[in-house]
Length: 283
Image (cartoon, rainbow, N blue to C red; front, side, top):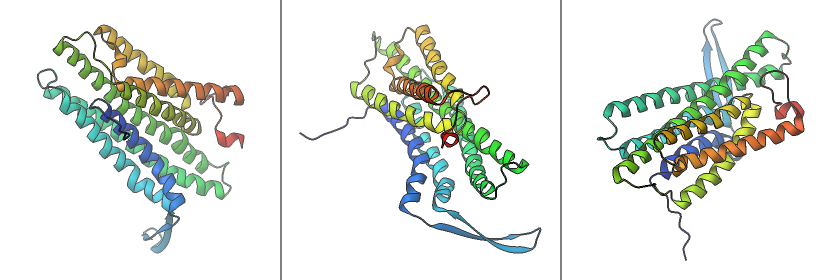
């Protein structure tokens, strides 16, 4: 018997956006271990009327040319897949245009945060190597890297994910009304794969956000989003767990919270934001 994974139309957008984020962020890290090279640049510094040479690592190069474009393309196809399935008689062109506009705003936030993080993180390494940790330059770079960059990336991604979750729920609610079914049956494989991917994603996100100084924010955002979805489903008398996005969000929320609480149990808590210790502080 051949092993075959059946991917339903409801699950494809979920899988696409999760993979877009995971591959987009993770591939440059893998790339640097496979291909170790530096990309040289020569340019003029006009204030000094001087030609200088500069080079960046293979990872930084891939961060710049791959991550944001890859996430943008894949997530857009996922969104378009969802919008195309939503019937015109139930979801007007105006509704779809507003959804697309919101997506573009959230995508812009993600890309902006990624650019800030990549540039500031690179400069942060240079500043630290020069022993300038007690200077205004270090504080400025640290702020843009650790607080603005990481947080903006996370806000952009979660906003896109939440938007697509809402669209999936609204589509399933409309499906229920149209066919007058008591419930839409969720594909069992969708649920299990969403749970599996969500658990892994939540663990990785928790670790990454601890290092990125924004873990506390999403310790609140994740359950708050789930509560909002639940309230929406109550209003429409619909079981919100029929959406693979929700199963994924449940798994992310639980694994994210468990990892964070275990971390706090071992490392303690700070009396000021971001409240949690970074791994680098403990080494």
